[in-house]
Length: 173
Image (cartoon, rainbow, N blue to C red):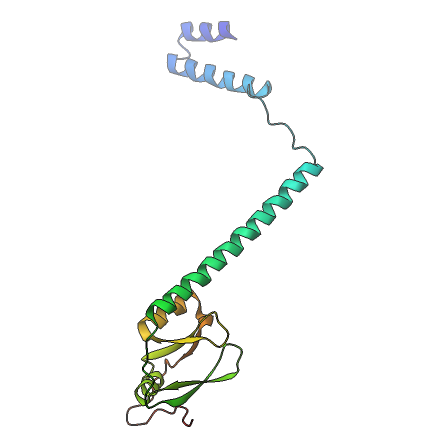
């Protein structure tokens, strides 16, 4: 093959560039016929008992990681709620009723001012981890809690009462 190329080049029928291109193509074809000159990857082995154990271990580790991340997220929300909970003085208290986490009606004793702010949507009630535990939050913090875990907000009146109408909230002792 080399001789034929040299003869064609000497006769002027093929230029140097064309000869190089033809040689390159011939080398590529030879390599492909010989298996590419590279070691081919061995065929995957059938799954053995060890591989099954490794997969089970990997699934278990993934489940633990997800559980740990969920626990951290719950703790982060609790920290935000505790850090920004309003301290409310216990004077002139009235009952403010709202639906709790399980749909049960709960009662929170608050002042008239706090009850009005809750009804106006300026404050929200968030759940703490303790049973029947809750905290009052400003609306900006309530938005942050809603982004992290919307199930922790027990009450937040986003729809404000029209002007001139008094907000309706629970009363009584």
